[in-house]
Length: 394
Image (cartoon, rainbow, N blue to C red; front, side):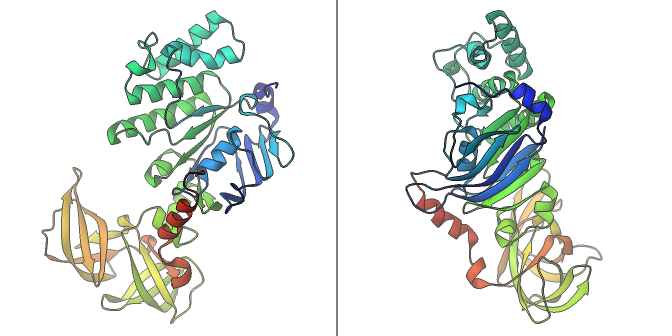
């Protein structure tokens, strides 16, 4: 089948990628993806974030053409590549993909692996070799072209996979959790390289991960998935500061949660909350319409907590349960009432067992309606859904 002419379509299409109400299920079981719609602009870096079973891999594989969608439509640079009635195969979609397990040809040299994308596009051998060598140099492997993948470390193999994706200038690059198999230090260094080189190339990127810190560090735009649905999409700052529900707040990083009752509405989206046994004047940011007397759960971001603050209000007493040195300072586990707040940072070390005072910034204290049925352990709900699809797809 003829490959899509990306070079021309990139200039005329209003967006690089558009998903219109796509859905996908496996063997008649619960939907892995439920009517997901989104747009990715030219040169934009979109990260799809969610736990196992949330549908992010199925969406990526559907964009790539590895999976057939059950309904909806996928357009790449204005060309429809998938719908209820048609399916363009992966090799004809004109995209590049970086896999979790590198997916390099073991019998080819590093240089030939990178040049393969150009060979597929019928670029002459001399030009292929020059461009492949140039791209290897960009990812710091200019001297490794004659080696085979088995002779490289995991980080080097992932750089080769990135070079192969970049050399083809496809315009759209898909990343399938490419850093998950690497150790922490290498993961951070390669994350910077992926972000820098992808943006330098002008390519549009769709990247999937379950790691919120990785998502926020990479993305221009983050889409959060839960049980096959796109529950929120926006800039990383918007997702973090204004999560659409408790699941998103939990999944994107909390120190802990405090249950209480709204005492008063203060204006500017703030409410005063009574936390029994802790404080009667915790000021929090209302994440939905709340009224006085209503039960709430206040989700506390780690960065909102200050230990032993000077002049900070509201203030409540707490005790240090544990302390860990993190190089830049100390992370404390703090007991407040019957709740433990984790990852409470300070440049000062507070000894275990000591009583301290806490200040909580309202911007990072997010008040949600306390609905036990809908909010009881969202992560467990996600895990059960993941188990339902285990061995089928994620």
